[in-house]
Structures are given as structure tokens and as C-alpha cells.
Image 1: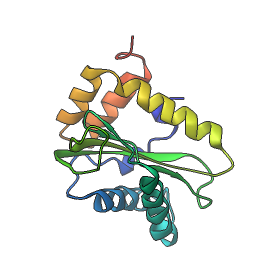
Image 2: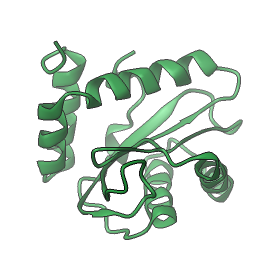
Image 3: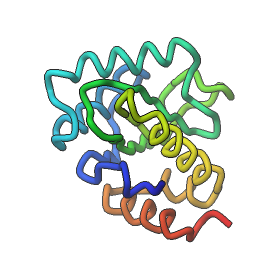
Image 4: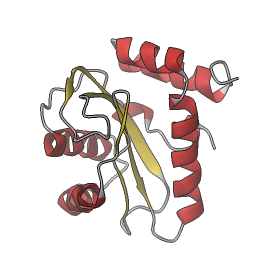
Amino acid sequence: MKFSDFVSVSAIRAELVSVDKEAVVSELVDSLVAAGDVKSGDRDDIIRAIMKREELGSTGIGRGIAVPHTKHPSVDKLVGTVGVSGNGVEFESLDGEKVQLFFLLVSPPDRPGDHLRALENISRQLRDETFCRFLKQSKSADDIVQLLEEADNNQFVS
């Protein structure tokens, strides 16, 4: 699975303004609503579902990266977005560091394979230090889209 299979380009946020965990999740879900990928009536329920998942253990996986995600019946296909925070956000990460890179996913409950493949793709790409460094330095959604395309074309992972 590639980023282009699930990342909503119009929902990408290169300059997140939120300064805490729930606000970042809300901002990213709002970007999916604005892009038309999530219905506005489902917004609050999706945010609650993601925050409930966070209670099981932070999706802040370390090295300035978090992958908040949930399964939700309101979506008929896997959808995701990317957000970058220049200053970083306290996200209760495994390593205690602030998070700068966010990959938020919402998938239908009846498609667990897609959900797992997307998480696998994200984690594989994010192991590449160069990819992460360039993402953190992105100044626009266009920069992020270009990096995701390069990752999809295997220009980072060996």
C-alpha cells in the first residue's frame, strides 16, 4: 500500500497550530472534514474514537512521530492525512519527546487489512531518517505531497 492510496492531499496540514494532543487530533480530523473525506456529523465521534484508542497507549511512537488512528463505521474506505508541527506537541510519546509528524488514519471496521497495511507502510517509511527530516522541514502541503510521492516510488527506503 502506498501513501497515495489513503492520504487525502487536500487534508494535509504543513503548519499545525494546535499545542496539545486532543487539539491536534481535532485539527487533523477537521482537515478531513473540510476535504470532504469525513462527514461533519461524524467529526466528534471520530475524535472520541481516536482519543479512546490513545487511552490504550499513545500512538506517539518516538523520534517525533505519532500515528493516531481508529476504525469507524462512517467511512467506506481508508482515509488519512499528514500534519507537521514546527514546535512539536506533547503527545505522551514512548520516548517522552514532543511530536512533529502526525499521520492520522480512519478506516472502516470491516477492512482491517487495509488499516494494517497503511500502518505498516507508514512505519516502514518513517524508519528512514532522511524522509523524516525532510518532512519535519516541510513548509507547505505541496512539499509534503512531493515527499510522499517520492516515498511511494521507493526513493527513501532501501
